[in-house]
Amino acid sequence: MKRALAALALASSACASSPGFSSRDEVIRLILPSTVQLRSEREGGGRRAASGVVVAADAETRRAWILTTRHFLEPIAKQDIFVIIPGRKDRVRAKVASLSSDSDLALLEAEGISLPPARLKETAKLGDDVWIVAFPWGRRMTVVGGVVSQIGSEAGEAPLEGPARMVDASVSYGASGGGVFDAATGALIGVVESHRTARVTTPGPPEQVLEIPVPGETTLISSESIRRFLERSGLQWLIRQ
Image (tube, rainbow, N blue to C red):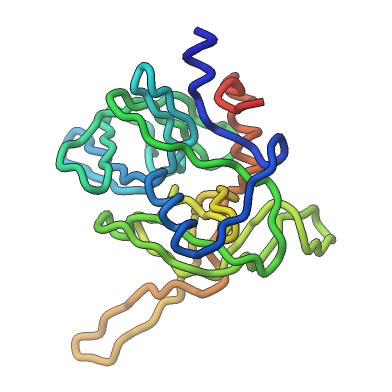
């Protein structure tokens, strides 16, 4: 059992230092394999799409643990969950390993795949460059650049460093659960939770109402919250100490 757990590769920057990378290309090549597409199919024909990030993997048993948002699975009901890996035609079934009761997080477990997990970085600085990797509208993988536009804090504070809360990169439906990676190191600083939109009416007839993402208003679930979720779920063994 210890040998299997040793293969789990979720690392935290609080426990181990991460080397910098010399080029943007190296960082992007590092983070892409950790991102997967998720599909949910419910009785009656209901379907949903989301993104997810591999946070741990066991190469010996070919299992992977994938982080996504809880709202992707809600309302909680009987449903089939599938993991789609870019470049592969088949789909892999997944099951719910844990749901958070106080944050918008869910952890899935999938068998038959072994993908490189992301590393956690629990703090960011205002203005840090980031990459978001996700599957908007349940289609092709997309990489979007941006900066950290807000740091999480207690009421009344205005910190310049801490858990990332918002980025200015625009996202859309299907990007929920997508990884937000530090552009300098490739470490995971959070996952996409939601994005604010503005309603715009096009000239008609017929008139159409479009939901346009508002820059700077993409909300994250920070890596600090991710670590806390795993610990409260009794899954702290997924985190390498």
